[in-house]
Amino acid sequence: MISLRKCQFSVRLVVVLACVTALSQEPNETKTGLQFEIGREEQEWIADLDELQMDEMYEKIKVEKSVIRPTHVAVMHIEHVRVPVIHWPEISNSPIGRTMSERQREFIDEANGRIRNLQRIEDGFEFRWYAVSENDAKKMAQAFLEVWTHKVNPKLQPVLNQRTELEQKISQAKKELPEKEAESRAINAKYEEIKKITHDLSLHSDAAKESKETILEMNKKLDAINIEIKGIEAKLSAIEQYKSKKNVSIEGLSKLEQILCEQAIELAGALARQEAVIQIRTREEDFYSLHRKWSRLNSEVSGLRRNIASFERNLKRVKEILANPEPDMRLPMVLQDRATIYPVATK
Image (cartoon, rainbow, N blue to C red; front, side):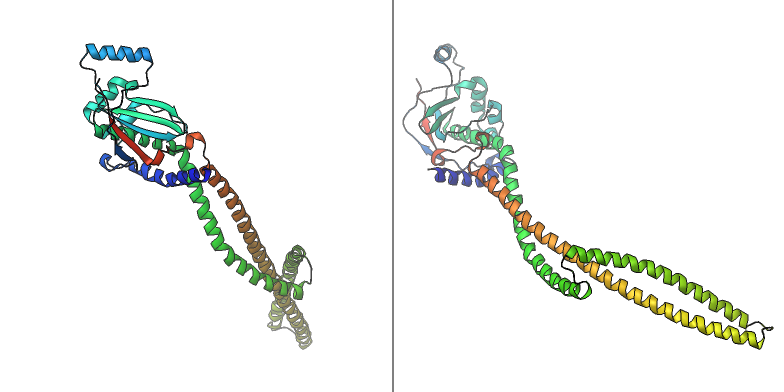
């Protein structure tokens, strides 16, 4: 019995979207899915009034011929749910309600409590909607369900939206996860290979830390070498200027040539050191960049796995809410989605 009700409610979750969409359609296009049978047995006019009020009403009918009497009644059984507060203008002004006859609208405006009767029955409630014609009786039942659905939807729709959003997030995350896992495995293999050659450390964090420290150290060395190179280049330039002077002796030229040769050797050494430092720095920068990529991919893979688990837990909770919603989130569940239209006794 419980699973059947859950199934029925799930079906109505699909129907509610159509019903809400129908609220924005033309009145003659609005549908509630309610089926009608025609009964032949005349029914009494029983309203939501106490006995004294009923007696006063009947006395008024005898005296004032203008009092409108119903000719038909729509009877339907609804399972035990919390019936929302629905005011008569909401029914008469609903898309279906606006298609009712003018006489029925007058009947609603004039009577209020005389157009409906609600009684508890074994499986729920029996609703009776009185009208001045068979067609108006159908529309009264439909308009009531339409307004009820419209009132429930603001509470139900966010949960439905949340379910859709979570399903989409799970689908997207599960689509991304295999791709990220494959990237992570490839980069991890490359990272481990390079780490063993260049660092031979067991901890990734240690390797990255050492690499970063090496980069900083090489930057400092490169700055010092660049300064040294600039100094040597300045010396070489100055020597060339002295050599170009006319009054330089042969001994002086010889001495300048010797210094020039020494500085050229120093420059060659400094340039070699510069190249070596740049190579080391480039290697460490590549390694550090690889480590950051490895770390990012592993973080993304872990994040996707956590998100999937979290989304699935939330989706389970949302589905439990939809399977057993709060009373004010329950749609009207009409027995067999069927109502019966009876004639009303004229006496």
